[in-house]
Amino acid sequence: MAMREGWKGWDDYAPFYDWENAQTLDRRDVRFWRRMAARANGAVLELGCGTGRVTIPAARAGARIVGVDRSSEMLAQALKRSKRARLGKRVSWIRGDIRFLPFQSAAPFRLVMAPYGILQSLVRESDLRATLAGVERVLAPGGIVGVDLVPDLPVWKEYRNKVRFRGARRGGKSRITLIESVRQDRVKRLTFFDQTYVEQRGRKRATRQFSLVFRTLTVPQMIRRLENAGFRIKAVLGDYNGEPWDPRADVWLILAEKQRRR
Image (cartoon, rainbow, N blue to C red):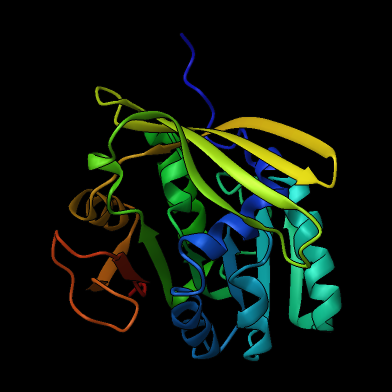
């Protein structure tokens, strides 16, 4: 059986992405990435920018930032949000594959951000290797890559058809229910989230179903891959306030520097 591609499902997820994140992650990580972007002293790249949940606050903080995402539906949401925010040329959106970063010139960025487990959607080792090689190419010497991993994938319990969240969409014109099933392929170290979104608007009821897949990567595993790609680890953090990491931490953050060539 062919390996399922990690990018599949994200177009269908786009209308619900911000709503679900408001129930779970909310904005806990946004301040961290906004501070990183404001201190970058140069252009910033976000991998898998989605709806601009992180990108737009970083641009508001004064960063010049480029968001790359494969999903046209996600980027459509991001474009609407950035127009409302009137960010002008501080933010740019590019539809592209993070495995093949679409930049002709090397080293245009001072910071590359990979928030919210985006690198774990790369289900093949070759995909991750290609992405890290591209990041190393587009980072200026001494530039930083920040990687945020999802810590609980390895121990996520399997379940079927569980109502995860219910609530009104912003503006209150409809109510959404998320029904979710979780499957684990522990041999391939993959976690599958089968999602059904039911949206009720008056008497009208719409249902959308799709699946997302993430690959388990521990902090030591990601550190080795970053070092093999030519990076030097600067910090490993266990929360968004800068506390040191340990395996029980709720947040797994790695900051690595592109080594300067002698």
